[in-house]
Length: 251
Image 1: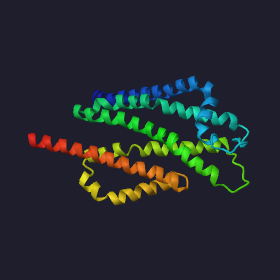
Image 2 (image 1 turned 90 degrees about the horizontal axis):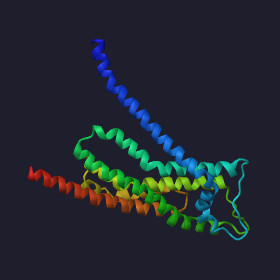
Image 3 (image 1 turned 180 degrees about the horizontal axis):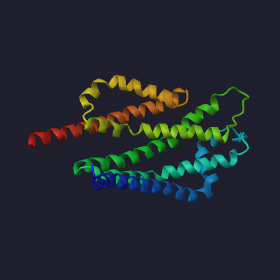
Image 4 (image 1 turned 45 degrees about the vertical axis):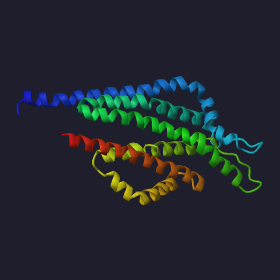
């Protein structure tokens, strides 16, 4: 192979790597810009995120910081996570812009609604955790302790706890997208999934047990929505199968 041929074969790869680098830099820059704009309000954000617990704590109880740097690092960490959270649509846009040129038109037509719905469902899962799950589980935790034990939660431990739940519920709410993708890719069918429904329901409760604190309330609050979301994905998967069958008959 001549140098000319070698250069011509390597050039597209170099261009793709350069484009990937530029899009990664744009994604990181978006996070940094949002973080800089939000950092001034870091303490306010922590007050908002801790409100579900603080509103239920016994009178006279407060949250505490057991580490020297926690009063600074904990709001800092929260603001950074929030910046990433708010940057997700732009980050996914950069990912989409990188892979879209290699997709066929019908693939783009199918992928765009999935991309938009995945973002929406992730945010919906986080909101569900904050407004529905947190009041219930914190209400249980703050009243279930032994008498005479003061509730004084560490701010760093609390943040780690709620971020874990945010992530768990955000990912769990992606089940319809995952179900539709598996059906569209031919990995399974709606008939097979219906037959395996009892196992999937049990699996939802097992996942709820692994991803949430060891109490039946939070486990059920994750497992039941997962099951309902699976049924939603099954419904849309059936619509896709019906459409493909109609297109095959027309052809």
